[in-house]
Image (cartoon, rainbow, N blue to C red; front, side, top):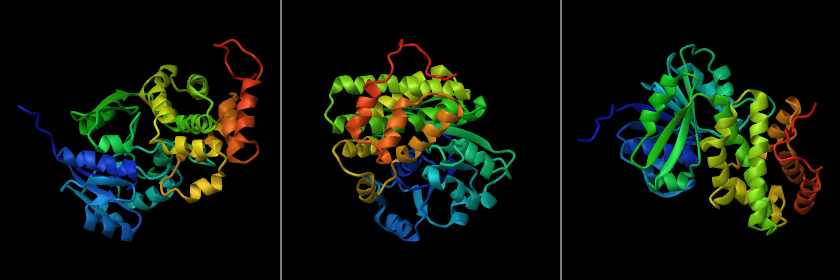
Length: 345
């Protein structure tokens, strides 16, 4: 006999490809899901067409999934929230939502990024923005998951992290299905950094493929990129083993080899000679790595950890060096022992 699931009313904030996929996943599990869309016009279109043709075409909405641009409507009678807005909009959107969020709400952050300027992770931004909710139960969801494949029901695995194990386990139960398996973790910082920093490496991998540098180069980039991510994470207080898991190595491999990655696609076009401005002007979705790269470099400076790949990606994004010059700069760095720590001082 199939296990009976408790029906939950869930508000998913953000109707990009991943937000739509997560909302659809919950709806197919029998939950009542409201998907918040910033644009009233888009909300009307999604309601009429029962499909997010802009961000996730070909996926027809489950009957339990409804769309709205009304913040009061999306939060009414809801205690479970999923945040999937772009990193640059998290603080603004949740500041508007804060008055409508119950004191003991369960909030799942599924945005992979670092806020520019403050250099805060998304959970840190949410904690600060929702300080009026002392009973807030916060978790982060990450891992190697392309929205398109998840929405098609292809097997995928993710990780949910919370400082409170019981909170992580409740989200695990909420999201786990026959095709979507969720593991738990308590290293929130490590899970968030892995999910954010891998986007920087995906840009670099795309550049390498755009330059047609081959599989050897990509393998080296993934390996040294993981070392760079881990060293920064450990310096900041995260656990090294987290970066060997789903939100680190898992997501890194996916975004550096899977052509569905927006960050990889941006990097590849840079490697082929296009300018960043031209690339972004033709994109409807956000490539988080573009913002995260500057944050990664800044965090490296703050924590005195060398970030050679991130630094070269940043230089390419800023138009300071050409992609092939960045590769040459990395290859000509001072020779080191493989397990030598990159931290300065």
